[in-house]
Image (cartoon, rainbow, N blue to C red; front, side, top):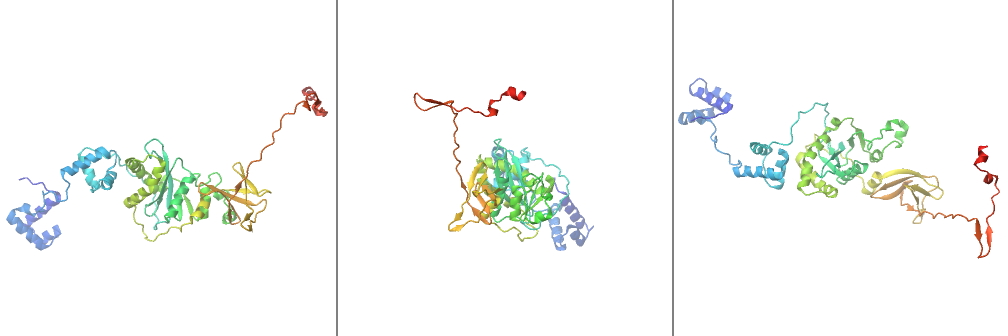
Amino acid sequence: MKIIMSTQEARRVTIMHECLKGIRTNKQAAQLLKITERQVQRLKAKARHDGISAVLHGNRGIPPAHALTKEQRKEIADIYAEELKNYNYSHARDVLEEDKAIIVSRSTVSRILRNQGIKSPKSRRPRKNHPSRDARSREGSMAQMDASSYDWLSNGSYLQLHGSIDDATGKVLALHFEQEETTHGYNELVYQMNSRKRLPQEFYVDCRTTFRNNNKPLESLSIDEELSGKTNFMTQFQRSMHELGIVLIYAHSPEAKGRIERLWETLQDRLPKDLARKGITTVEAANAYLPTYISYFNRKFAVKAKDPELDYAPSIPLRELKIILAHQEKRKLDRGLSFSYLGKRYSLPQMTGKEKEPLSQRDIITVATSEYIGIQVLTKGRILEPVELRERAKAIIEDVPDKIKLNEDHWVSKPKNNSPWHKTNSLFFTR
C-alpha cells in the first residue's frame, strides 16, 4: 500500500527505522524528535508489532470530528453565490457569522470558495514603503479626522462620509454622512464624540480650508496676538477647537495619516454592501444606522493601546458646546442697540427681568448661529436672545401732475421751476 507522507513524517519514520537497526541510540532519536526516551521505546515496540508506518499519528486519514460536511461546504458556497457576490473572504466570513450563525474561519471560507473557482474580488497589492511613526501610546491622546467621497448608498449619490479614528487603538470614534464636506459635518463628529465621552486631546487633519485658512495662516499673527487669543485669521473650526482646547496637527500627505486612509479603504469595500443588505437607501437612515455599525466595527478591528490608561479630554456641557460650535461673527451695536445680520435688523433686550443689561452703542458683540440654537448674541459674558425688527414701510412717491385739480371747474397750474440749471440743455453744456 502506498503511503503519502509529509517531510516531517518521512523524517520521523527514517529516524525510528535507524533506531530499530541500532544505527542511532534511543537518546539520539529522542533529541532529534524532541520527545522523551520513554516515548521512543514505546514507538519502537509499536513499530516491531505493527510495522514502521505505525510510528505515524493514529488519526492519520480519519476526518476530524469538527470538519465541515460536504453539505455544509455546499451551503456556504451557495450563500456566497446568491447573496454575498463581490464580498471579499473576510467580509463574507463576518456576514456568515452575523446573519447566518455559521461560524467558520476566513481560511475555511477561502478554501471552500477557491475550490469552487471563486476568487476574492479584492486583489492584494504590494505595500508601499513610507516613513512610519509610532502610534500614540494612550487611547484618546490623538484622533485622525477626514472625509471620503464615495457611492455609499450604491445609487450614484456620492455622499461625503466624515469620520474620526483613534490613533492608538484604531477605534472609530464617530461617523456622519453629509452631501458635501463641510464644517457642519465635522462639528457633528465632535457632538458624537462629546456625547460618548470620547473627545480627544488632538486632531490630526489635512490642510483643507475647513481646518486652516491657507490664505492668511495663523502664523501671520504676532506672538502677543496669539497669547491674547486673537482669532482673526482662524476658520470657524479652528476657532471652536481653540476654545475647546483641542490642538490641530496638520498632515501634508495622505500617507502621514495612514490609519484613517486605510479606514476608508475598508469602509468603501464593506459599508455599501452592508447598507444595501439592510435595505438602507436614504441619508437619514444611514446616519441612524452608523452608531450600530461603529460598535460592530470596533469589536472586529480595534486593538489594545500600549498604555491602558485613557487620555480623553473632559466632556463639555451640551449647551456650552452648541455655542462654541456655532458659526460666530462680530457685529457693532448702533445708537438704538441694534445690529444688522444677513440682511435683517435685530435689537437686544435692555432688561432681563429687573436687571438692566450693560449695553451701550459701539459695543462689539458676537453673533452665534446654528440649527441647534438659532441666533444668539454673546457679549460681556452673557448670552442674549435678539429680537428681529420689522422693516419700515417705505413712502411711495407718486408723479406730480402738471396741473392740480381743486374741483370740477378749477385747475391750478404747477409752479414753474426758475432754477438756472433747469433751463439749460445739452447744447448749453456742449458750448
